[in-house]
Image 1 (cartoon, helix red, strand yellow):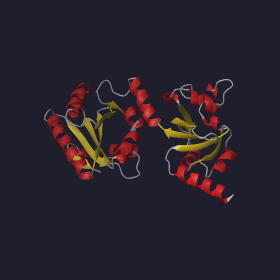
Image 2: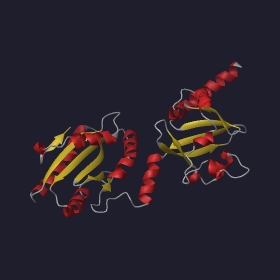
Image 3: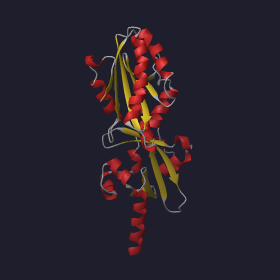
Image 4: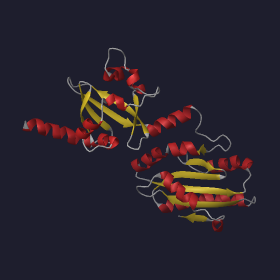
Length: 277
């Protein structure tokens, strides 16, 4: 009995190191799940999950775009039905504790004769990005910059990339004052010609542009923004006025929060100046 308990604890410790949701299945029913999975469902343990939830397949949102209980083939279990579909279509949607739908790609390891291991990897942001690109809604047609919805929906991809590369995210907001809308595409084109391919230029609202980029430190964000200021001063020669503010996304801060901080910092006194917040 002690050996069984030790083996169980060892397996639990191993799966708890994974960020993906891990569920061990026996006879189509979960018998163990990792910490990430418990956190997603808002429970402290697998035992608490078992007392509060029904069949695991009932967690899958019944949306036609994802696998759910309505797609179980007659005479098959939900595991068999899910395992039978193409790898790219093994996607489910589940609600987190805030009742927000999250999309997961599912991998099924059936190498053990008795147990199955389900690995669910959160692909919500990547899926939204793919859908928006496929439906041609990532670019603001009038300006040529990325649109605000695309930026906000894919913000976590940018933050994940920054964390992986051990970089900070710099944000520079350019608000044009009294710029005629027909001149915005020309300005966007000039800015895109002076930035890197991985930098993201967004039409945030009206005559406001937002640039998101990765940097090693705050000084580099300032240098990067100084180049933008120089470019904008050329526009000033054409009689244009602008606000230019820059910040870094703070540790533990969500990117939209940092953008909001930028947006609220604009004032008339900083016209044509570079402002760090």
